[in-house]
Length: 360
Image (cartoon, rainbow, N blue to C red; front, side):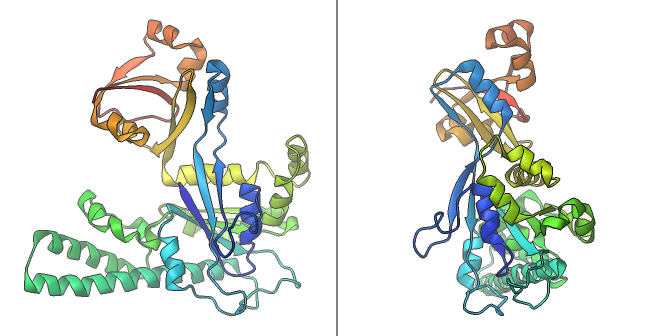
């Protein structure tokens, strides 16, 4: 999963990148490139399974964080993104927008005042206008194609795009648009920015941490919309905590009233908002966590591991994590019937331990 971090200048993007990845923006990037870091998804279930199987290799699910540099530091008043920047954003699976709540006279805000709600609106407007330009251009092209030679696919795509245009014209992001499976297939290649899941990080002052709920209250109606969420944290402080020894970090967080790390909170938020779950494959060679969408059927989950497994799928041997841990071994689960055989249409559940039977 790839998450792109975006925000206006001086919003704290680099501090958040450091808090999430343990790397500075400078060390996370090659010369002239956007900082990138791959972070393992913490999961105590994976640790427990590894302790039981003692595999040669333990592999956690991973998230790639990218801090995109979209606005020139030489023009702090600029608040718009280039087409090249917006094109990079389209490669993300989800967007993480940083808006500033902290006040620091030594770090001027590019819009001269601190207003996180206004900054989020500015970012969303940029995304919406970019999507609208793409939709309008494609609609014009399709109408010409249909006039010259009508095809069923073009007619269906045009109808789907006109549905998108109506939403965008009303300043409504596409992530909440009710689309049929066919419409989603037709539109998938556009990778619309307002169709992507969006987490807003409100970057707090240290003295605002204990008032997070109060500060996030104005975002309540926005974050109740489909595939959106708002989280409050102090990126600078979280970055400092990330550099501490593991044994010291919990006490430091407790002193400031911070319940869990920025990374843990944002991963949990992303999984919940995007409807993601984890299943596991286990054995002496490797214990591994895999990420899929909730409701993914067994064949598709098999394909996440390898296309050959999906193509040659026969059956899936499945046991829940809780049942397995209660018995301690696969043989015991087979004996008491908690290990079962499932077919192609089985919807994989969070925590399932699966062995795929296949033949190619």
